[in-house]
Length: 114
Image 1 (cartoon, rainbow, N blue to C red):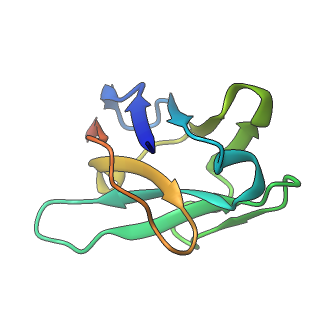
Image 2 (cartoon, one colour):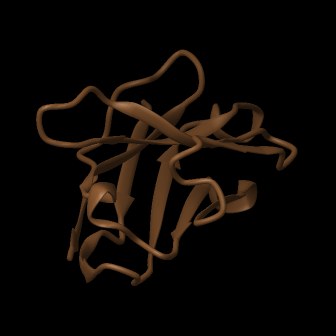
């Protein structure tokens, strides 16, 4: 059974940093592209970064240069290092497969105050 558990969110001032983690259960992890998505209040969920099984990364323009995605296939875990946070980064952050999302986890709330 697939399970995705996100953690590491919190309240931070603008310019601060957070590191999110996502632990995945199931044998799908190491062979799939994994991504971090976010959903702000009143907005659609968007993909902000993804990483291939071999470590190739891609970022949305709004986070490029500030966020870094990484993964540890041995631990079935994907990370998102977020630096220089802005109030517009406030959202619930989720990890999932890219493409072909699996069941969503509960997400982790990131709130950036100005």
